[in-house]
Length: 142
Image (cartoon, rainbow, N blue to C red):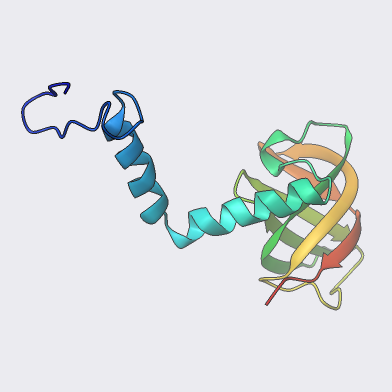
Protein backbone atom coordinates (compact mmCIF):
# COMPACT_ATOMS: atom_id res chain seq x y z
CA UNK A 1 0.00 0.00 0.00
CA UNK A 2 1.42 3.36 -1.05
CA UNK A 3 1.67 6.03 1.60
CA UNK A 4 0.41 9.46 0.62
CA UNK A 5 1.20 12.81 2.14
CA UNK A 6 -0.29 13.44 5.57
CA UNK A 7 -4.02 14.03 5.21
CA UNK A 8 -4.20 12.63 1.66
CA UNK A 9 -6.10 9.44 0.99
CA UNK A 10 -4.15 6.67 -0.63
CA UNK A 11 -6.13 6.17 -3.80
CA UNK A 12 -3.12 4.75 -5.63
CA UNK A 13 -3.00 1.07 -6.44
CA UNK A 14 -6.26 0.23 -4.65
CA UNK A 15 -8.41 2.38 -6.95
CA UNK A 16 -6.77 1.30 -10.20
CA UNK A 17 -6.09 4.92 -11.10
CA UNK A 18 -2.39 5.08 -10.40
CA UNK A 19 -1.06 7.73 -8.04
CA UNK A 20 -3.32 10.51 -9.30
CA UNK A 21 -6.24 9.87 -6.93
CA UNK A 22 -6.63 13.53 -6.02
CA UNK A 23 -6.52 14.58 -9.67
CA UNK A 24 -9.41 12.22 -10.37
CA UNK A 25 -11.39 13.61 -7.43
CA UNK A 26 -10.74 17.19 -8.64
CA UNK A 27 -11.96 16.34 -12.16
CA UNK A 28 -15.16 14.81 -10.79
CA UNK A 29 -15.76 17.77 -8.47
CA UNK A 30 -15.15 20.22 -11.35
CA UNK A 31 -17.92 18.54 -13.33
CA UNK A 32 -20.32 18.80 -10.39
CA UNK A 33 -19.58 22.44 -9.65
CA UNK A 34 -19.81 23.91 -13.16
CA UNK A 35 -22.00 26.97 -13.51
CA UNK A 36 -25.05 27.10 -15.75
CA UNK A 37 -23.15 29.49 -18.05
CA UNK A 38 -20.32 26.98 -18.47
CA UNK A 39 -22.78 24.20 -19.25
CA UNK A 40 -24.62 26.43 -21.77
CA UNK A 41 -21.32 27.38 -23.44
CA UNK A 42 -20.33 23.74 -23.77
CA UNK A 43 -23.72 22.87 -25.31
CA UNK A 44 -23.44 25.79 -27.77
CA UNK A 45 -19.96 24.67 -28.83
CA UNK A 46 -21.14 21.08 -29.30
CA UNK A 47 -24.01 22.27 -31.51
CA UNK A 48 -21.68 24.60 -33.43
CA UNK A 49 -19.34 21.71 -34.14
CA UNK A 50 -22.24 19.54 -35.27
CA UNK A 51 -23.44 22.32 -37.63
CA UNK A 52 -19.98 22.87 -39.12
CA UNK A 53 -19.54 26.34 -37.63
CA UNK A 54 -16.31 27.97 -36.52
CA UNK A 55 -16.17 29.02 -32.85
CA UNK A 56 -16.54 32.80 -32.65
CA UNK A 57 -13.27 33.12 -30.75
CA UNK A 58 -11.46 31.57 -33.75
CA UNK A 59 -12.95 33.64 -36.59
CA UNK A 60 -10.32 35.11 -38.89
CA UNK A 61 -10.51 38.62 -40.27
CA UNK A 62 -11.53 39.05 -43.93
CA UNK A 63 -12.38 35.39 -44.34
CA UNK A 64 -15.77 33.87 -45.20
CA UNK A 65 -17.08 31.96 -42.20
CA UNK A 66 -20.03 30.20 -40.66
CA UNK A 67 -20.69 31.03 -37.00
CA UNK A 68 -23.30 29.73 -34.59
CA UNK A 69 -24.45 31.06 -31.25
CA UNK A 70 -27.21 32.46 -29.13
CA UNK A 71 -28.56 35.96 -29.65
CA UNK A 72 -27.69 37.98 -26.53
CA UNK A 73 -29.01 41.39 -27.57
CA UNK A 74 -30.80 43.15 -30.41
CA UNK A 75 -30.53 46.91 -30.97
CA UNK A 76 -31.68 49.33 -33.63
CA UNK A 77 -29.11 52.01 -34.34
CA UNK A 78 -30.79 54.59 -36.50
CA UNK A 79 -28.38 56.53 -38.62
CA UNK A 80 -29.04 59.74 -40.52
CA UNK A 81 -29.14 57.88 -43.84
CA UNK A 82 -29.51 54.14 -43.16
CA UNK A 83 -30.86 52.29 -40.09
CA UNK A 84 -28.87 49.32 -38.80
CA UNK A 85 -30.06 46.31 -36.84
CA UNK A 86 -27.21 45.21 -34.55
CA UNK A 87 -27.32 41.76 -32.96
CA UNK A 88 -24.80 40.26 -30.52
CA UNK A 89 -24.31 36.52 -30.97
CA UNK A 90 -22.33 34.55 -28.38
CA UNK A 91 -21.11 30.95 -28.25
CA UNK A 92 -18.98 30.91 -25.11
CA UNK A 93 -15.69 31.53 -26.92
CA UNK A 94 -16.52 35.11 -27.84
CA UNK A 95 -19.13 37.53 -29.09
CA UNK A 96 -19.86 38.32 -32.73
CA UNK A 97 -21.55 41.55 -33.72
CA UNK A 98 -23.92 40.98 -36.64
CA UNK A 99 -25.11 44.09 -38.48
CA UNK A 100 -27.91 44.21 -41.02
CA UNK A 101 -27.82 47.58 -42.78
CA UNK A 102 -31.15 49.00 -43.87
CA UNK A 103 -33.15 46.73 -41.55
CA UNK A 104 -35.24 47.82 -38.58
CA UNK A 105 -36.12 44.29 -37.49
CA UNK A 106 -35.94 40.68 -38.58
CA UNK A 107 -38.80 38.46 -37.54
CA UNK A 108 -37.57 35.69 -35.25
CA UNK A 109 -34.27 37.34 -34.32
CA UNK A 110 -34.60 38.06 -30.60
CA UNK A 111 -32.61 37.38 -27.43
CA UNK A 112 -32.33 33.69 -26.58
CA UNK A 113 -32.71 32.42 -30.15
CA UNK A 114 -29.99 30.23 -31.66
CA UNK A 115 -28.79 31.44 -35.03
CA UNK A 116 -26.24 30.39 -37.65
CA UNK A 117 -24.79 33.17 -39.80
CA UNK A 118 -22.79 32.93 -43.05
CA UNK A 119 -20.67 35.86 -44.14
CA UNK A 120 -17.30 37.55 -44.24
CA UNK A 121 -15.84 38.52 -40.89
CA UNK A 122 -14.12 41.80 -40.20
CA UNK A 123 -13.00 43.41 -36.95
CA UNK A 124 -14.22 46.69 -35.55
CA UNK A 125 -13.03 48.00 -32.20
CA UNK A 126 -11.25 44.69 -31.61
CA UNK A 127 -14.39 42.58 -32.01
CA UNK A 128 -15.45 40.32 -34.90
CA UNK A 129 -18.29 41.75 -37.02
CA UNK A 130 -20.34 40.42 -39.95
CA UNK A 131 -22.29 42.80 -42.17
CA UNK A 132 -25.50 41.62 -43.87
CA UNK A 133 -24.85 37.88 -43.45
CA UNK A 134 -27.17 35.12 -44.58
CA UNK A 135 -28.76 33.59 -41.49
CA UNK A 136 -30.71 30.59 -40.27
CA UNK A 137 -32.69 30.37 -37.06
CA UNK A 138 -31.85 27.01 -35.48
CA UNK A 139 -34.61 25.39 -33.42
CA UNK A 140 -33.56 24.43 -29.91
CA UNK A 141 -34.49 21.26 -28.11
CA UNK A 142 -37.02 21.46 -25.30
